[in-house]
Structures are given as C-alpha cells and as structure tokens.
Image 1 (tube, rainbow, N blue to C red):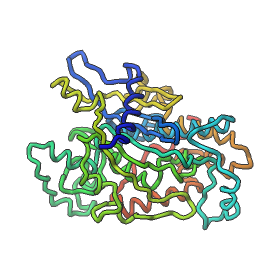
Image 2: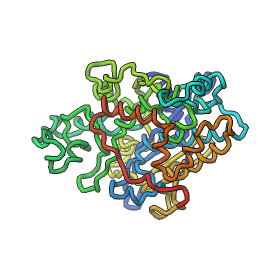
Image 3: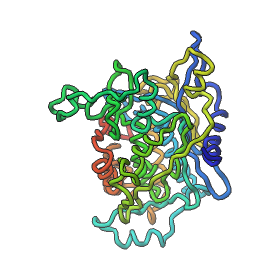
Image 4: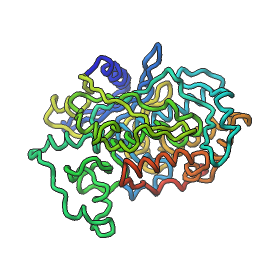
Length: 425
C-alpha cells in the first residue's frame, strides 16, 4: 500500500460519489443490497491528477446475441472493460476539441517534424504512424479496479474463497484437441473452472446455466493493453499509441494476489506469461510491450461486494452499469444499452457503443484538413465497421494483437459477429 495508490483510488472514488443515485446500486424492495465493481482511468500531469473516465458493471452479451447487437449494444460491460471504452470516448472528445480550435491538457497535435519521417517513407514496408495527435509526454495513465480483474489475476482469490482450497483437477478431456473435445470452447477458453490450469486465457465467468460467451476475461484484456496501448481501433487512427500505456494498476489490498498478478501481467519473471514479449518493440509503429506495476490501496469502494456484505447478509449483484466521461457523458446501462431502452433499438445505443464512437471519429476526420488527413478519412468511410478495423492504416495494430496472442495470450478465440453493420442503419 502506498500513499500514491490511495491518491489514484481516491480520484476515482470521489468522482463516482458525485454521480446521481440512479447510477448507483440500490436496496431492492425485497431487502437485497446490491453491489457492483468499479473501475476508472486517472491521468496524472505535472500539476494535476484527474479521473477522466470510469464505469461500473459486471455482465456481458452472450455470443448468440452478437449478430443482433448491430453496433448498438455493448458486448462486455464488466467495469474494467467499460472503463477502457469510456477512456477511448474521452480521447475522441479531446481530439474533437483540438480539431475545433480548443486546447487539451492531455493531447497535443503532432509536429511536422514528427510526421515527416513517416511521410517520406510511406511504403508497405514501413508501419503507418501518421496519426495527427499524440498523448502528452508529461501525463501518465493509471487504472483503479475495486475488484481483482476476473480471469488469471483472480484465480488464487477464488480458490481461497472455496470451502476446499485445493485446485480442481484438470479433467482428461483437457488433453484432447479441440476437435476431439465434447465442448471445445469450454475447454480451450474456460471460465472459472479448472483452478489448477493457471496462466491461460479465460472467458468471462458466469453461472453454469448462463448462455455461453466468448468475451475474454478482464485479466486477459488488460494484459493485452500492455502491447496495444489503451487505444481502441478508432482512436488509434487519430492518436499515436506511444505514451498511451498504463503506468500502474491499483487494486484494494483484499483483492491483490502477488502470485497471480506476476503470473498474469509480468514479463520479467520466469512464471510471467508475458515473458516472451519482454522489451519487444514494433519498430516505427509506436507500439511496444510497456509493463505496468501493480500497487495496492487500503481504500474500499462503498459498493464493493465486501463493504455491502458488511452492511447486510442479504446481497445481490447489480444489473445496472454506469459509464462516465469527464466533461461529457454520464449514462446508465442495462443489458449493454441505455437504461430504459429496448435491446438493439438504435435509440438505446450508448455513447461508447461501436456505432456512436465510429460516428464521432468520422466527424473528427472530417475536420482534419487535407494536409493532415493521410488516408484516415478514407479508412473511416469504409462500408462496414469490420472494414474500418481491417483498414490498411491499422495493419500495425493488428500485427501487435496477433503476435501477442500467438506468443503470450495463447488460446485467444475472437468474439465475432457484430462488425458487419454500416453507419447508415
């Protein structure tokens, strides 16, 4: 525990407390006290420290529902993943501010000198690195999570919470190939099962009777961000990934397992599953393996499972998620859409949904000007969302993801089915 970690955590907790009651867990009519995880992103500059994005939530969309999402419903609203989405909305808003002649304490325009080497060597052999904006070098990024991220970073905690703390035996079917196995997804991408099978990519945990999902665990997604940066595909078209990496991950003391975090996130110890990527750089692209440190805080979230359980022995997980972006957005979400809207209704699309963030990116691209466009507008104008992500300017980002999954996060199965929508629908 450090004072520094407490300051980061406090920044997120204080912003959450300012939200209206309708964005927070409640006590139900039957007396059940709701709890929910909270995550937030904090930017620390030379003269200020500000929470710029936060989220609560703990559910995700079943794989069978992805084709219906149509860019409107969010796939994964676990707090950590939703906080990363809200951060990317914040980044796009800051880009928009700059294109409209405003100032940003977080982003800056890249200079002609920075962009000149890219423009002079713009060939298929040179990774594209022509984003017009950059994250400021003197502003570091930090993430607070009120719960241990689901997946590999929390396995020891889950084991310790069982009546029998012995790891579950791996069934013989795990030695089978996916084609031989009766349930290949469950075996190659387990949820909470098979405790003794550690250091592996896992899907989101769920009740045994819940519809299956292919959303990867928060541990896996945060580990991947050490290579891809915090930027999504859309933001990576506008902002250089250089500097947009976490410096620290802050967890409550009660939610920290040193063994699990070293194994899950580290590259500098033999047991670290990211060790194959130590000191790796993807030359010329701005991407590299940038590890963060994990620190602990003694502070607890008012609606954490532990704090709520101390108030009442009748508790339940909340089905409400909240998304908040500094100087911009405050939403309540249920089932991946805005609270009060029907599933897969266009009017229910969150500001952090694929569809609406794509629209904002297009608006920003239209304000760049021909001299600095560099093909960005053309990629954003693709017919479908999938075509944007597969655009030539994002080739370096795709390579980073592919190599990270191949060399460290093995067994990653992509969550497909919601990329064929166009902006006009």
